[in-house]
Amino acid sequence: MNNEEMKLNSKFFSHAPDEAPTRDGFGDALVELGKENERVVALTADLKESTRVEAFSKQFPERFFEVGVAEQNLVTIAAGLAVMGKVPFITSYATFSPGRNWEQIRTTVCYNDVNVNIAGHHAGLMTGPDGATHQALEDIALMRTLPNMTVFVPCDKEEARKATKAMTHIKGGGYIRLSRDVSPIITTKETPFIPGKANVLWESKRPKVTIFACGTMVSRALYAAEELEKEGIGSIVINIHTIKPIDSKTIIAYAKKTKCVVTAEEHQIAGGLGSVVAEVLAMNFPVPQEFVGVKDTFGESGTPNELFEKYGLGIKDIKEAVKNVVVRIK
Amino acid sequence: MERLTEKKLAHLYTNANRIRELIIESLLHAGSGHSAGPLGMADIFSALYFHILTHNPKDALWDERDRVVLSNGHICPVQYATLALAGYFPIKELLTLRKIDSRLQGHPHRNSIPGIETTSGPLGSGLSQSIGMALALSLDKKRNRVYCMMSDGEHQEGNTWEAVMFAGKKKLSNLTAIIDRNNIQIDGFTEDTMPLEPFRKKYEAFGWNVIDVDGHNIEEFIYSVLEAQAVYEKPTAILAHTIPGKGVTFMERNYLWHGKSPNKEEAERAIKEIRSLGNKISHE
Ligand SMILES: Cc1ncc(C[n+]2csc(CCOP(=O)(O)OP(=O)(O)O)c2C)c(N)n1
Ligand SMILES: [Mg+2]
Image 1 (tube, rainbow over the protein chains, first blue to last red):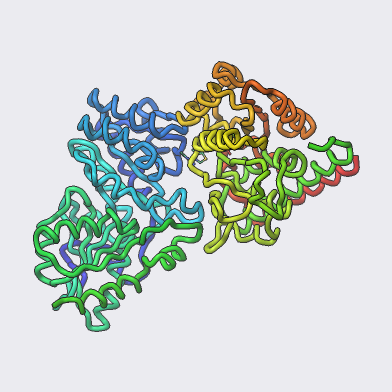
Image 2 (cartoon, chains in turn green, orange; image 1 turned 90 degrees about the vertical axis):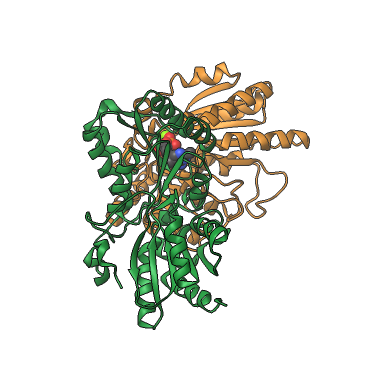
């Protein structure tokens, strides 16, 4: 059942949800931040419009910097600004930033422990027809292995807005993973968002499994839960919007409750949300786990829906994982 | 390279316009992709694949072939169209561009279709790979050449200049960089976004031979490649001055067409214009 306390968008469960790309929420937040905090600056690497810094650049031209196609320069200039007390946001596609400039992030942002906020756009298969070179499927792993780095994977436009705004208050580097194409709006302005605190969005009366999901897989997990409920399989769906620091307490509590878990992410299985959950549970309360994610392969050109289907990230794949995991309980 | 006759030259221009048509058709069917860069490079691709290169469309992996690296992978519609026209794969396959299960990926993928030497899309990685290929050819005592197709925008990447420096140091004369100097990138004109001039002087300072050419004058372009082949002590950079969107007036010189594909009405207008221009040239 839809958890009322989460004040989710009522239209979501009517299956006629409003849709928007998470990158729009990022762009809106950036403008709000520009007004609220004059230390906020933004930089891009020849991707002003598609990474949604255009509005910020128009309203605060003196606090906006275009570096050209140069992602290593992008993050290192930002690190210098942050050392001086500015709060930079840098935008590019996730395959290039944090992909291409990972070592610079490691040393000049994380080891320096300065507040540079990295927006990784066009993440995942949602990037669609541009193909594998532009579909970041490794960025969560790249960012969550760095000390002094916070990692957000928002599930919709509204959550992306809240996460972006939260980034300025968090010490050290920040990463937000964003998608190009539209996804359903699940949450509302009233939905709580506390960095590092997972949100229980769905709770059946007699749950047999907990599904941990992040980003674009949260809506799919909720629709899977709804269908499973009708088939007599109760479940819990938890939105892990913050991958780092991870909400171990919630993960352990629900593993204890349902004795088996499924993780779902639009990312390589290696190193992503599934890995985080497995680490937490292996150390605290091991239970059977099934992983829905990309299985050690690159993506390709296609529409997002075709790709989610082909690479095993559909609603039916989550349901299948649930059915496989519940029978593994000893 | 065979001698360039009047007749051959006219044929190269005709092919260039046929390539433009195929670019428009494939982009229309794809529903997304890049228009300006590919159209601007059609004349050069026609000259390369139908006159300059040592290659064999029926045996794409022929050992004696010249290597073409498309560093600015986003303009792959021009390479796909040219490869298909040259006989590497069926022309009708161009209509699968950017679709699921297609061999024609949104950005070129090595081994996915004959004639693609290496994967690209992320900018600034092509010249270094071309250097690696050129080094391997000299190690193997082969005389084939490496042509690295580059954009102006990707000269803002540090990796590009690391490569320029290395090729200059090694005097890699079997390497030719062909740079699409079309003055646009995504966020605007290159000189507003992040200036690249003086382009020629920068390459010269790193020990390269530099030739400026009109990228729509096929004859002039072919002579510049001949000069590059004749220069033994340096790598050559051909700065090909092109008009982005060339051949389709409403796309020409407009950076907003960098990453946009035409809709049906626009595609029809574009093809009509390309065809009439093609007729004019072949009647001259
Ligand atoms: C490393 C990297 N950063 C960013 C991009 C996104 N991108 C695609 S094309 C382009 C720049 C366009 O300039 P140019 O290469 O001159 O393209 P043109 O419009 O002339 O075809 C950018 C920034 C990319 N492909 N690779
Ligand atoms: Mg350009």
